[in-house]
Amino acid sequence: MGRLRQSNENGVLSLNNKQFFPFERNRYYVGKLLTSADFQAEQTYMGNKRRFLNEMLFGEGVVCGLGVYALDDVSLMIESGVALDSMGRELVLDHSVVRKLSAIDGFGSLESDCVSLCLRYEEKPEQPVYTVNRRDQEAYEMNRLREGVTFLLLDADKTALPAQPENEFFSRMQLYTDADYAVELSIPAFIPCGSRVRMTVTVTKRSERTLPFSMECVLQSPALTAEDGSHETKITVVDAALAEGEQIVRQVWLTAQQRPAQDSVIIAEPGGVDIRLAGQRVQISEKMTARAVIEQTDAEAIIERELGRVSLESREMAAGDTYIRLAELKLQRTQNNCIIESVQENGVKQYVRTNVGETQRRLLLAYYGSQHTAPVMVHAAEPDAQAEHTPSVPRDPLFATGLCEIPLNREAKPGPVFYSDEIMHGLGKGDVFVSLGFEYLSEDPKTNQMSRSIIYGKTDLFADEQAPVPKAELAVKVMSDRGSFMVAAKMLEETANALLMLRWMAYKIPAAGDKLESDLKGKRIAAMPPTIVMGTRDSRYFNVHFHNMEPCTLTYTLTEKGSGEITTDGVYTAPAREGVYEIRIACTDDPLISTYAYAVVKKNNEPEDEQSEEK
Image (tube, rainbow, N blue to C red; front, side, top):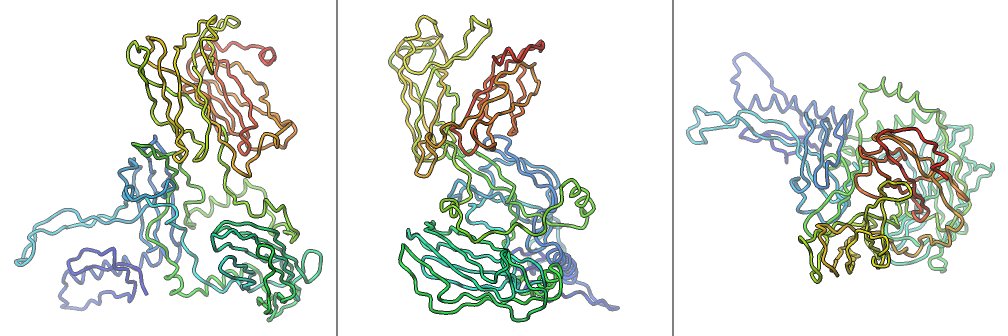
């Protein structure tokens, strides 16, 4: 029942042999003839013992470092660091490295756009040396084995966090199960006297069929009381339409009695469980119980005891794969390339907790306020039917904008059609409307400064302004299944411009369930002040006022390249050149609620009355 490696007959350590036991070490005696097998046994014994302790005492995960960053659209930087895999082996990356996405193992086998970057152990033989007394074998052998690491890309849905070994901490009761739905109750099997304990009821959709689910369940707990002091708890679910794999979780906090009880039970009587599938009632004929023991002890003692009771065989069977997940990558595929859209580490990495950082950990915890040891009671009353089964995933944005540059031949003449590259609009797959306008810079006679303008539609209607915009016929091809589009431009007159500069604005057509404009009526946000005057390379914060709505998370974006930088918190840093720059501010969950702010950047950075700018 082991998982560590041993040497083969040639002295090369096999990564496929995962045998742990038995642990055997050399027994030395006077006159013993030592061969290469004896020295290999010595190395195997010491290595296996060390890795066995690594696994038993620390587990698997990142010890330090190994941060992942996107350097550009196709390259990643992985910082130096240390990790332990499920076999207790040390994975040491002694210096930061840069890798092209296409050069990482597994890239050619990816099937999805959400992938995991993983780290795994690797050994390489080095230093070939000449061997003596080896007539029937090769004349050279590798003198060293260098321990190192390699990187691997896997589809995210094919990787998972390490499984936890089975233990007897929970007492479970199957309230209902069929091909479509499963309903399970769980509660800690051992409960301290007088303490609060969480009981969980989970409804899981098991099939692809569309089948609304409703449940009203009354649970009796003779030795546990609900918030109202009674010994009954009511769990309800109303017309939940779940997709395969989705869950509804109901959590209720109960309080144990003050005296020990060896045979405490949670009871579900047949008449107290009413389950309906698509409005049709399901007959429940059996009484169901979940048992728990109420003891005169504390929660920490129970947890330590139950974790310590897990057998070595159970821990071995729960061991996961031998790679360590470092980050999750979102990719965008174009016709000729695959680019990195985002890198996510939070929730992906699993860290190893060591005693070395315990002192620093306590010091850092002092910067956070005390937390409640007992979470707030979750009532069994029915919550909003829409919110109860909505998956907790971020909504796609509904609006995006950017610049499109189409190269033209020198002195492009009327007739030829010019095409842009494929443009990823960032709104995901689905129906998207794209509008195009001609963008140009001109001197504003009111401020005597260069300002940016965009003309949508026919440019010749603004002939009096003499806008430096060529006449062209435009068309857009939207690839709904790829989340991208292309622009075609046919010149209607000769132009000396080498580049056709277009501003594109994409709108996601809301699917069923998305908020419409009528739902957002009266809600708006405003930048305060909407215009600020600042010097080059200066930083300012854009504050926002909310009208007829609660404060929410905001998304700040720059509407053109080279206009500086802005953080996710709204701190804008001006570029090195003068100009007027536009910042779009939108509600993250409701992108239709948005506003614009403007930064007037001057090199002299002379103070001006911002109130006059605001007016």
